[in-house]
Image (spheres, rainbow, N blue to C red):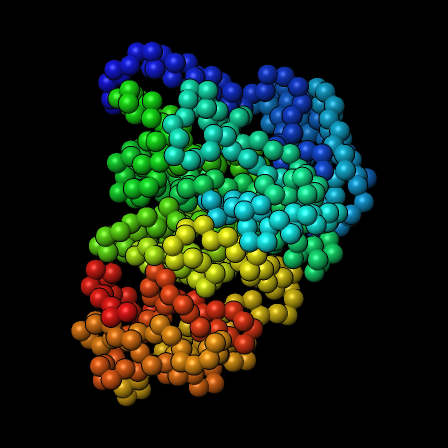
Length: 525
């Protein structure tokens, strides 16, 4: 595609790409291997068939023993093998797993409980040591029921240029590293704060072992986590993979950061093929999670979107939202296929407040996905963000809201898990009446009336600040400037101080009753 003006770089790059490709092949050089999710101290998923899998020399007979079960398999022509343990019962007593093939592997100190995967970009990966009150929880990190597998990436996607040795790590064998760890003050600080606080909540409430797989990479778009097969089956996403840097579906930040990391390749004239990068479609799946699935998990926590929402022209906002809906729907379907679970729970953190103009439309896409994809639910985090910081440090309340969802939807507790969600609306004279689900018995302005950040518009599509009055489980919205209302919006702004909650203390998700194009929707707020 591009001429190579730097022969030394091209030769070095070609060699490194060949080495990386050899390292990523499916045929092991010899000896028994387990998936990266199986190490000492692991937690195995209870209550359903538990896959144990890995690689060995083709044709090798494999036996796996755990918890009184012993199963056999044969390594296929590509070296892969798998057995499926019958559903396991909860156990906080350490046990050993023994795999015998061309060699013997013994994993010790394994528990049985529930495993949750947290993934996405930097806010999913934000470490406990940098979170609000993180130091307090690190100092007390001694919960014997909590284990975590932090899949740490190298090189990291900061703004630095990567050297040839770092570029050579961009493959499934080397990009992610990590072992299961017991909860300890020496290890907890590096783990996802969202995941850690979530695991503490569940371990405390359920009194069962909770495992956390932390696999997230800063700045990654949704598409980088989609399995290759799912990407290729989607015409729009397949087109992105063919010419990533030219795709209108890719935000400016992603393109700029990729070129910062691959500066040598860029300066050399971008010789084909482009090196692998964690931001390219399917890369993070191939580098890490392809070797984890179908390791037993209870569900997925997903905090991502900042990169996919990186558009500043209102004329692009509707397409951006549609692209994300398509990509996230494809991701969920691809992950569920890889984990062989059509009902795999997916719990998503909606983008919080931040002074970025596209975010209202992106939040709507996240809401739409949560409402239309089965076994998917949304945490509203608008009130927990920072208008001037893309990395809000107050992760604990976000994790606690995720845990509420899990306790209600995954564990069957009778508890409110969502803030008010708009169910219906109608025009009554000069007002619009809104009705909601998840009122928890009542709607409130948590810091006292009036409710803030409601807007109303007529047929001219000009929005004005509105008076919003709670009446039981309804809200009546009006404004003197709009005698014939046609639409209402709530929290339809990048950042604001909101106060519309239910009595369970959970905030209302931003919404609008119209579907007007972004470029034709001026606001008075």
